[in-house]
Amino acid sequence: MPNKILTFNDQGSDVVFFDDGSTTVAGVQTGAWKTQNPDSKNSLSYPLADKSKPLRNVPVAYRLSDRNQLGLSVGGVSSSSLNGRILLEGHSGILYWLVDDDGADVAGVDGAGVCFFVYGHVTIDPAKNQLTIADSAGADVIVSGKPAPAGNSQCAVSVSPGDADPATAIVPDLISFNAATLNKDSARKDFSLTAELDLSGSWDLRDGKTVFTAKLDGGAGPTTITVGLVGQLKGVAVGFQFTETGNSANVLFTIHGRIKGENPSGGWDFTLGYAGSHFSAKLAVKSAPPSGSNGFTINGSLEVAGGGGAPITIDLALDVGYVFNGGALQLKVVGSAGVYSLEVSGQLKLSHDWAAEFAIAYNSATGLDSFSLHLGNATPGTSLNKALGVFVSGTGSSISVGLTLNLTFVGGVIVPDTTPVSAIPAKEKP
Image (cartoon, rainbow, N blue to C red; front, top):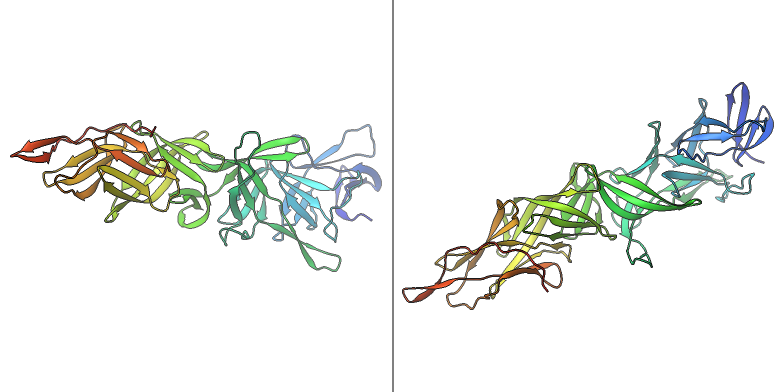
């Protein structure tokens, strides 16, 4: 025996919706109601007793309780919360499938399951552990998440590589939002059903915000949707941390990525995610104070041009170590496994007391932005590499800078020329 979901008066007749998908109008069984709408607007359609007339369409408003159970309102009348399960499939929004007291999908009058299509733009706020569906009327349906089993213990979102496409070998990014519905069985005991909220796709940057473009498979074929994420990116040695807006100390999860310098043009290639979304970026260094005898810290930002609109700014905080051996300056981001490939050009200066300093130009297109490393004193007569060039090592995570030195005799002693070597262009190692 089906259960009533909601009764309301429409055009002078009492209309009843049942949980098996059936409808009665003025006590007469008329057929199945549905919520799937080609216009992607939240509405409910039902057949009238007069079959010659088209389906009657009425607006519907949805809500989710703190147990993530769906309720609906039609014609000013609201239903109670309904047993069900949540998943993302084939459209922008969620599906809510009705389940019985045993957790099995309810069998509908048309032989299929019974579900509600909840349409709207999807946004994830990892700091609040919320997935929000904002409909065209401005109403929000909020799915409450819980800390994911793996990853950040306080965050409902986890990020990982997906399965590689066998045709292209591209590895997509996978975002999982951990949530569940808490239902009641016939004895009024709670039982939980895990929500299927997995997104496979790639990262994008639009209008100064981080978004995720996902492909969902539905009955009518795959659909591409764009999901917004509330937060900000920060560059660290292990990749790019996604943090709470205005609170970079609250790290929510880490996204795979890579930065590769393209000096002297001033542009940097920025790759985000396992799928390898490429963007162009400009580096701005705020400061580069020494962090030890063989290192310094880069505090700055990347201005990244995304898929459209305003660029996004990503803060950087990187510890860089360096050595100066045999005439080669080698730099490496501490703790990085190939995330940063900081190709540089610059000028070497040697004073008469053999103190070496290398001025690094990180945006030589302007010729104004640079900072210097003091490399210490070399020993007179040391054999120095005479090669000229800048290249990336085979690991992609360190930089070797070859140097050309002009040596002259002064009073019978060989000393370095104090004239700086001209800035040399970056080129990849053959």
